[in-house]
Length: 130
Image (tube, rainbow, N blue to C red; front, side):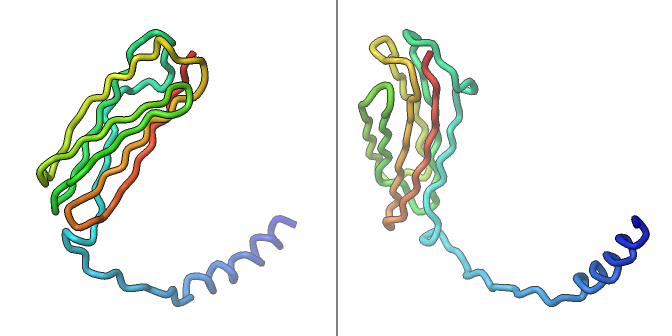
């Protein structure tokens, strides 16, 4: 039975190797076509004890210049931050989040960045408060 299965699949695999695959051309990208890049740099642990201060570090990069970065905390706590900068290409920040008044559950840290030509990017980091 095994020889029959192998004998049936060999011609099928050989036929698949000869298929033409469609190729879609990608447009040329310049600095104006690319949205900002958001990198979360810390913390590494996603479980936080209630009462500890959670410090979220992030970097935002864009070649055409960053205009606004907004960050919001939702879930077990709710508040927001906003930073505006003069078209810098790199934005680095640390956001200390006190958890002493939080309840146990999920805490979402979301970031939105807008560059000088209007491209927008968003990022989300989720933590668990215990």
